[in-house]
Length: 228
Image (cartoon, rainbow, N blue to C red):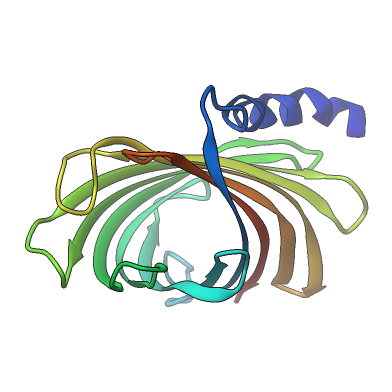
């Protein structure tokens, strides 16, 4: 079974390999990111559900809490492969040097299961449109993100997890420059803890495009998922 997954894993890993070798110098940083995600159904049929999450991002060689993200979402399952919804997020960014930034983000997303095999391999897509507002500014920044994730069994209980996600800024404001701004690539392993609960540790590479020197974050990423 493992050999059957190799080609699929290679295709998803390709953007990571290409993007992790930029043509010009970058500033590197070591991060530790943790996240807690919970979702549960709102009705007996399971058509409507809600999701909540908190993420803590320790930056500057993992020395300080550089960003805190709190996000909520209400979704509707059109069928077993497609669901849509929207939500709100608050993001506190506290970089070294500049003043902290308080962001209020509204977003809509479409989630589609692209592949599901009898062997347990899945490929999922999440397309998210964000409207970003900031207490420190008066413009609305629009951003598009497309997340594609592969999960493939590697043992009886564990799965290999990999995803890629570019961030495309659709306009220019005080807080975004327009065009490709961030590209994230992740590889890790799912570890079940109980029914509906799993932890996914892994490595995340985040490439940040900036007006000056670009930045590459090397992230030890650990997320806890709870589905009820």
